Every structure is written in structure tokens, then in C-alpha cells.
Amino acid sequence: MTDKTEIRKIDFTTAFLQHEYEECEFFGCNFSGILFDNANFDHCRFVQCNFSLCKMNGTSWSDVLFEDCKMTGIEFTYCNNYSLSVSFKKADLRYALFVGTKLINTLFDGCNLMEADFSEANLKAATFKECDLAMTVFSRTNLEKADFTTAENYGINPVSNKIKKARFSRFGLEGLVSCFDVVVED
Image (cartoon, rainbow, N blue to C red; front, side, top):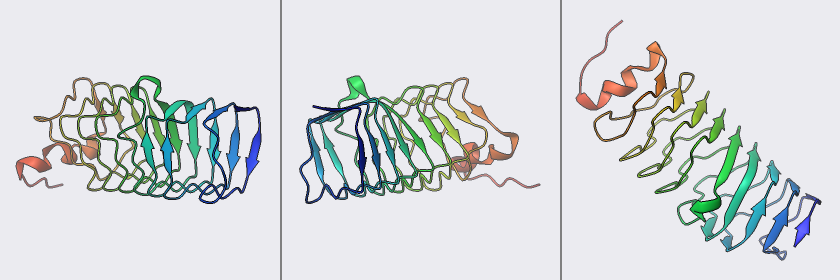
């Protein structure tokens, strides 16, 4: 196990990845395309790292922050859902897969989530602060108490998702009725 370590500019596509990291900080590391297989990350922080096209097989992310990371096409679907506690700040999460994940109280702050897939995910009380959600998929998703007040470009079907007590700005209400093929005018 590696703990309380600062790790800088390591290319994990060629370097060895330990199975357990606790209270570590990763800066400018490359994880692009690798398979995280039953790894454990506890109280870790990733800054300006590349996770594009990574897959997670049973990996645990407990109290982990991803800040200014490239995470295009990352696949969180097969993470260990019992310990999944993450937050994202200015992360590029285009095409990310969160299908069936449990992301209660998760913070997405200033993230690009274009065409991400949250089908069947539990996003209860999640916050999408200043996020771009263009063409993001919400299908049979629990969005109860989620905060979309500063998010933009979302399209959420209130019939096929749980949205009780979710928060939306008046200017974003069009994203809730677009599925009904209605025209909203100023």
C-alpha cells in the first residue's frame, strides 16, 4: 500500500500501478486507457491527470477528488458501488459512463458532461454546478433533490426519471419539457 505520498507526472500506461493508495495526491499523471482492476483509492486527489477511456473493474474510490482531469469516455459502471464517493471539479467527462452507479451527494463542479450516460444511476442530492449536460442521458435515473440550478443544456424526461424535490432554475425549465416536443417561447 502507498500512503500519504505525492505522485507527479508518472505515465501509468507503462509504470506499475499499486493496488492500494491512501491519502495520496497525483499531479499530471497519465492513466489513459488502462484497466483499474480491483484497485483501492482512499482519500486521494487527482489534479490534471488523464483518465481517458479507462475502465474500472471492481475498483473502490472512497472520498476521491478529480480536479481539472481529462476523463473522456471513462467507464465508472463497474466500480465498487459500495465505496463510491467521488467529486469532480472542472473535469472533462464527455462520453463518461456512469450506468447503474450510486453517486448520492456527488458534486460535479464546472464539468463538461456532454453525452455522458447516467442511465439507472442514483444521483440523489447530487449537484451539477455550472456543468454542460448537452445530450447527457438520464434514463430511469434517481435525481431526487439533485441541484441543476446553474447547469445548462440538459434534457431530462420527468416521466422516466425520479425528480421529486430536484432544483432547476426558471431558465432551465425548457430542459424538462423538451421530451414532450413542445415549443417554448420568450
